[in-house]
Every structure is written in structure tokens, then in C-alpha cells.
Image (tube, rainbow, N blue to C red; front, side, top):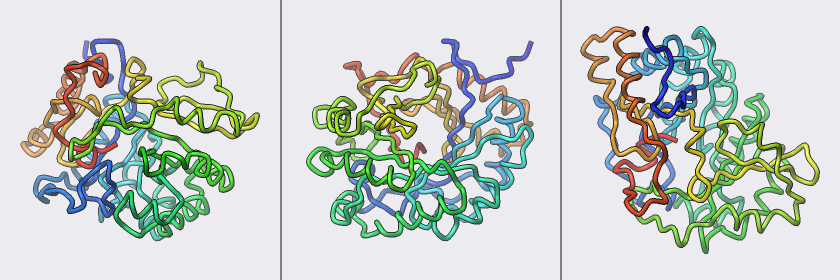
Length: 333
């Protein structure tokens, strides 16, 4: 009997697909890439709009995927983004479709994305201080990001989620003001431990701001209380109610509190490679088979086989851990 879903050897089934649309970005965040940028993928290597929709369709129709997250690089730089979103939301069964973005250009595209069927957005924002923003991103674009957040909220791309990474000696004291900002604007804030995915391979566990440190800053002034663990499911964020609720804040402790055992994610890179884990050292090529004329069932079978090799965990806490060769901008979040 043909296996339907994207199951691995440990009983996990991937139903959440992260699709990178480009490796390019218009920021140069210090924890992601060098100031001069990277050697971007050549256009012939990138999946076309039609190829992306075809593979997403295979995932939804044949493999049980019901959540699609478009990522980058910066996905708003993808010229065909609105069309890709629209064609994805027309699939049957209709998946939930979201976007992870740095927010630059979102103010211009928010309405078109909403009209295309996009459900919500995650916006990366590590500080609300202009000087710190420029220090972290090497760009003076904070107002563009804030405008993007406002536009997403205004057109109904909700809940608008904000993802923040704290860096030691840069913004590690700014967790309270970030949370106050998000509470004031009705955004859902999630702090993410810095992960070893930078192009420079400069990640140092000793200097990483941990989930416990973030909680130490927030627990007393905001009256944080853990939400019901049973409601978390495969969500990566631990959730805490703020001042008695109903508002919450999340912490994604990928390094210090791994949640690999409940992982339901799979990734497709902008050049058509399946990654069964964010930290995988290997990939499975779908682009070559796609361009050689493979049918949907063959592509689905290749995808299933790719997932069988998924490891039980990312191994960051193992002495033998090796950082992926590709940086986050090329993998897609």
C-alpha cells in the first residue's frame, strides 16, 4: 500500500511546508550574513513560479501538507510572490498560507497579498530603537518595517506575529520594550534563541541569549504564566500569558529546549531541494526530476523517501554537531 504522508522513521509526520522563494535579502543582519552579502543563486538554479506551485500542489494534494509558509531570504523580493500565493490558496484542499518577512516593502504589498488569500504574516523585528536596528541590520529601514506591520494589521493579515532575536551586548536588554510595543499594537511576539545558521559560522553558544534569560527579564514585570502545555502540540514556541491573559508571548528555545520529537516541518529551498530539518547536512533534489519530466506521483514518492532519512533531533547539543553548509538565507525559515 502506498504511504500517503511525509512520515519519518520516528513516527513524525510533516504537514507544515516552509518554501523559500529566494536566497536574496535587502538587510544584512549580523547574525545571518556578512555586510557585503553572499553569492546569490543564479536565476537558472531557482525554481520558476510554475515549478514552485507544482511542488506545493504535490505536497498538498498527495502528501497531506496543510500549512504553507513562504520564506526567504526575503520573499517580498520575489517578483511573482502575489501570483504564487494566489495559486496556492486555490489548491484543494485549501492550505493555510502564511509569509515570513523582514517587513520592508510589506506596506506596498499587504493589500495585494490579502486579496490573493494570504492568511497572516510573521515579521522579523529585533528592536524598536533606530540606532540598534541599524547596528543589527546594517540598514536604516526601521520605519519601513513598522509601516509594514501596520499595513498587515490594517488589511487583516492577522494575527500579525513578530519574531525577535536577542544578541548579547546589542539588544539583550530590550525584551521588555519589545513586548510592550507588541502589546500596544496587538502583535504576537515570539523570541527566538539565536541558532547556528549564520553564513560566517560565528555562532557561539556561550554568547547566545537563552530562553531562561529572556524569561528572567519578563516574568515578574509582565506576570508571565505558562499556558496549558497540552495545547502546544507541534508549535515551536512555549507560550506564556501576560498579566493574566488573554495576551501571550512566546519563546522558541531551539537550542536549550529542543522540540524535535514533535517536529512536523519540512523545507523546500528556492532551488528545489528538500530539507527534512533546518539543520540537515544533506538535501534531496526534486528540481532535477521535475525538469526531467517526472509526474506528480514520482515527485511525491521522491519526497516521501527524502523524509525517511530524517534524524531524531538536530544535534546542536551534541559535541559532534556540525553547522549546515547553507546559511539561513539560503535554507529558508
